[in-house]
Image (tube, rainbow, N blue to C red; front, top):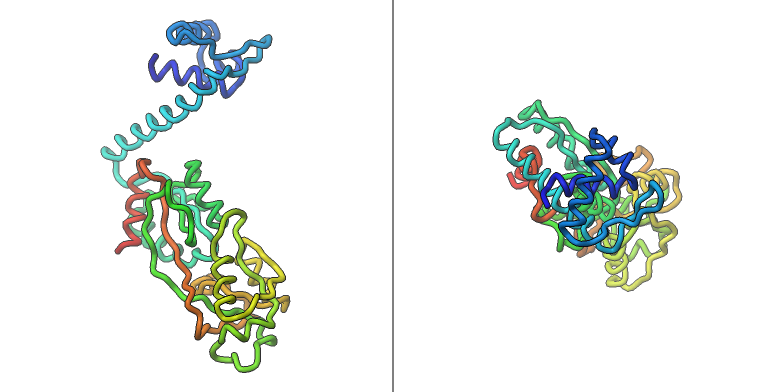
Length: 292
């Protein structure tokens, strides 16, 4: 069994029939069928159930498919790593970011482009859970996320903590909070809070902070997209609590941002990438930039 046979097997499994697999591999059907037969003889197992021209994986075939996928990905990463050692910094850098961290990107991308004009970018957005899934599926190389986040599968660089701020429509500022906000003043406010698609994060941290101050918040809307929340605040639907740097990128003219005087909770963020995965030169240089 060699890598070429694994690629043949993997493509047949993906396509579900020999004919389509042969077309995708740009080879004739008979030699592809012969290679599959040789692989099954060598392993002494049946890898596919044949249903006319359609083929489905047996239990043994499904197991091999999972292993083959991992091996082929690793082989591709080895190729890329070898190429990186022989080439300059160029190619595409794929980055995922939560919108509440977006303000960290523009200056860095501008400087990166100035230093390395051969690099282009692919940007994806989502909440922290979605970005972590994009990193795990290798759709992006690095992600910028809000913590907490399960980090078992990731290496990371933690970024500086920052305060949360209160965000209000300019005509709905609580009395006594014109310059500085006390948490207790939020008890009667209808709140619109960031909440991930899956998992615990900032939403739970804000709820806990409110409870530390002796009240249960009146949450009227939960949403993973900070720009949608700020748009609703600008329309007077309610107030919100967001990381301070969020307003560097998204600041509707009708809203007022007020520092919170007595909140202990801090917004934490990190740059993450998949453990034991080769990072391209451009990704490594991008990650290193956050430590400079």
